[in-house]
Image (cartoon, rainbow, N blue to C red; front, side, top):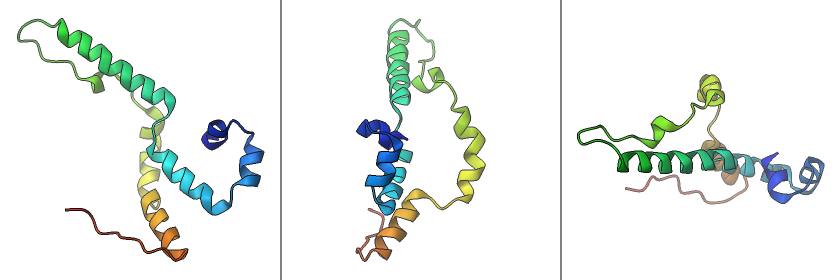
Length: 109
């Protein structure tokens, strides 16, 4: 759905115009990319914490932006399911290798 919204096209267009293998890569990309609502919430939390910290009393503990954000209840509910699934990165590496691409899986030092 996010890909359809990004393109400003109906879902039927996305499903007919994008090859199936490419949809998996978009899914992986969007799983790491925050939604617009999450971005706004993060920015608001940072600005609120900044303002609160400018006006805090001497000796008072600084406010953290993470303490001002709503908990992601959807994520918490599905966290156990996510741990059982193949990670998106693992899926991307497997798909790239299957397509014949050389994939460097060595982690940078």
